[in-house]
Amino acid sequence: MSDIFTPGQAGPAEGEYPRLQELIDAGVPAELHPWLGESGVGALVVRMGIRFLEMSPARMVATMPVEGNEQVAGILHGGAHAVLAETLGSFAASIHAGPGKYAVGIEISATHHRSVSSGLVTGTATALHLGGTLTTHEVVMTDSEGRRLSTARITNLIREVR
Image (cartoon, rainbow, N blue to C red; front, side, top):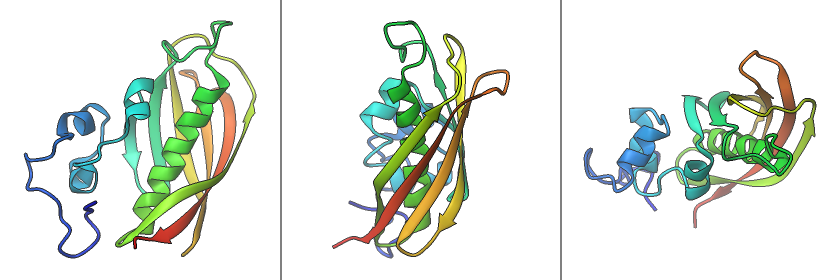
């Protein structure tokens, strides 16, 4: 796997990324295309309709539509909240991990405060701890009126690529 962090691992030249359109559709900034150009954002991110608005280790923001992600009662599925939270926390931790390292989720919890049955949900991950071996992010999901829908916490372990 190539990345933008490890010397000599810049990946393919611009325009040669197999997943370039996927990155563009997901809102990934151009400066992160070399890092994700070969792997993309992942099939689940695409399937859930997650679109990134901000991407950094300290703050990661994305939206996700309710439509297509509901449970049988017609409201956003609790697992969809967790998918959005894990996506944001894990991407932020991966960027923080840097050269020759990667992040893997080791714990996630979520509290659901309010339901939503339509529109877009916005998830905002804020770093609580950015260490050398662990990162922890709080992720708040809100509806289009800014009302808190859920609060999640995700912890990632940073590992070295072998």
